[in-house]
Length: 256
Image (cartoon, rainbow, N blue to C red):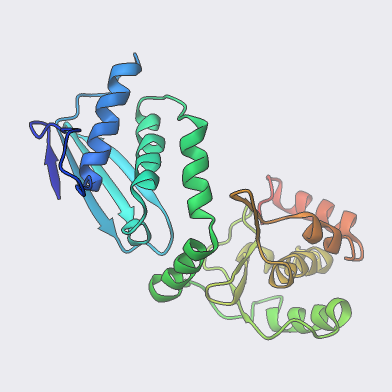
C-alpha cells in the first residue's frame, strides 16, 4: 500500500473517518520534521506492508526517498492511538530523537495487556517455527537433566515439556523457555566436555523456573525475572559456583 507526498491530510474530515496506517505514519513524520532540527533524508512516499511475523516486531527503513514500514499482523486491529504511538517511536529513531514518554507508555500498556498477549501467543503458535535439534546431545541428555532436576527440586511438579538443543552454539544466550511451543531450549554451546555439569544443570533449572513462574505484567511493564522468580532461584544448590563456572566458560555477558 502506498501513500504519496501529494496526498495531504485534512483534519476537517467527516465524522467516522479513520486514518489509514500509512496516513498516520505520514502525519507523524511531517509533524516531527517540523519540530526536530536534525532531519533524515527527504521522504516522498510511505509504503506499509503487513507481515506474518510470529511476534510484535515492527520495522521502518528509508530507501530512495520512500519510507518502508513492516508491521506484524498482530497490529492490524490495534486502536488508532496505539498505531500513532508506534509511529512516534519508530520515526523518532530515524530523527535520532527520544519519543515522548506518553507514547512509549501507551504502546507498552497496550502491548502487555492480557488480550493482546493472548493474541500474540496464538500468533506464535500458528506462525512460529522452532529451529532446534533433539534433546540428546553428544555429552548431555536434556531429558535426563530435566527428569533429575524435576525430582530433586520440584518433586515432579513440572509437567512434561519439549526439550531441545539450539541449532547454533551461542555463548551469550544459553537457554530460553518458549511458552508458545512449550519448549525449553539450551544452547548447543553447553553440550561440550569442558562444560561443568553443575553449570548446565543450573541453566536447565533456571528455564524450568520459568515454567512455574510465568512472566508478570505490572503497570504495562513486562517482568521476566520478578521477585518470586528470584526468590525461587535461590533454592539451587551451588548457585554461586554455577554462575562463576558459566562466566569462565563463556567469557561473555550472560543472557538467559
